[in-house]
Image (cartoon, rainbow, N blue to C red; front, side):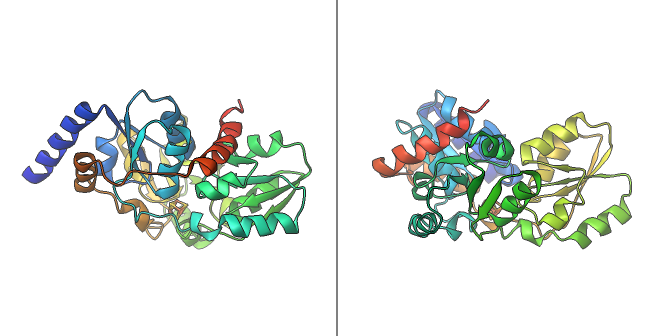
Length: 303
Ligand code: SF4
């Protein structure tokens, strides 16, 4: 505990010295969430990275998120305390495989989920997040869309749009662990609970939900809903924030199996070391960065 106190003190001191801001995803451990200046989902974190006045961004999430911060804010130093915290979904498509897919489906606009590498974003027309999926799809002047890399998100989009969605076959290893029987079991135990599900889940799980939304969407829903109990169909790290911000309400994970090990790789010691040594700086080649930024900016420009 004393050791933790010293680490916390060290991080706070370095934050002032470096004029640094700590951004953390909703799936980070509670310790990392508590030290962060801002905790949110991919869209919220991208917007924070775009508007911060800090010189240094310490990014606590997975690889593509830190890269996104660097793409948006190239003049800032972006530190990523654990370079091995990689998103397996983002790793399921490469720029070369997307180029080939595009050549097999010529002339069709490409929407890439924010969970992609900078090189894949650079090959895409526009990005989307789970918060703005439909807004992005509706903004495209085409009745066909190539969607990468998450096929479940693509299924969900397809179920709600008249456009033809041509999906890449990637998936989130964490969200596919949430199954219909998990929701049924929890509903049996907590019949009056509202079911909130992330759109990276399978469509049969999505169909059982009262609300399908991003992690920040779940935070907003839980805050404003008169319901007292909620079954949460996403990575279990979100429950910390939900419980902290809504002490009078109850939250149950759809399944404890929904845990993303990559999101748990960053800890306070690694944050301190990265700041102390200014190590693990994110770098994106300029030609890729510029093209990837266009795809992100088109998304951020949508009101
Ligand atoms: Fe990637 Fe899924 Fe983990 Fe998010 S929860 S970082 S999409 S594997």
